[in-house]
Image 1 (cartoon, rainbow, N blue to C red):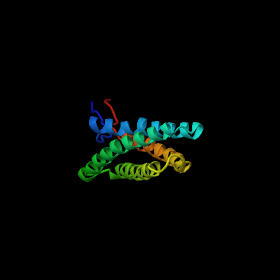
Image 2: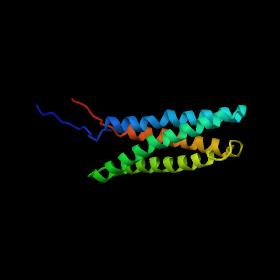
Image 3: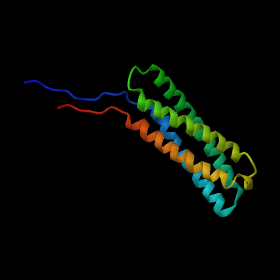
Image 4: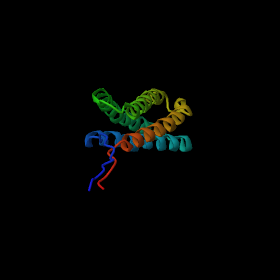
Length: 142
């Protein structure tokens, strides 16, 4: 009897890389919700919360991007999905940085562009996290 093993083995995310990647979601979501709260109430503290949450998301996202670039350089094959993952992280980080510069202005001057960028950055963070975790190990024993 012959066992046919048709598993597709890909590299899994390192647990620390997974924490860094997953940490961007709640921080950018918090920034988005804080921007929404500011646009609804005009309390300046919401804009301050958004600034700090976006800065935290940039720290986590920057380290996740650095890790992804190192993994991309070390990868020997199947770079298509990894390249898309790195591209999404890069665009997320650049737009998040621009968003933090928008939030550095006066709170009134940061709207509506700050809210729009927060939505875009959060969607990019969701897409990057989805692709990052979806490229994990697949397959099983028969």
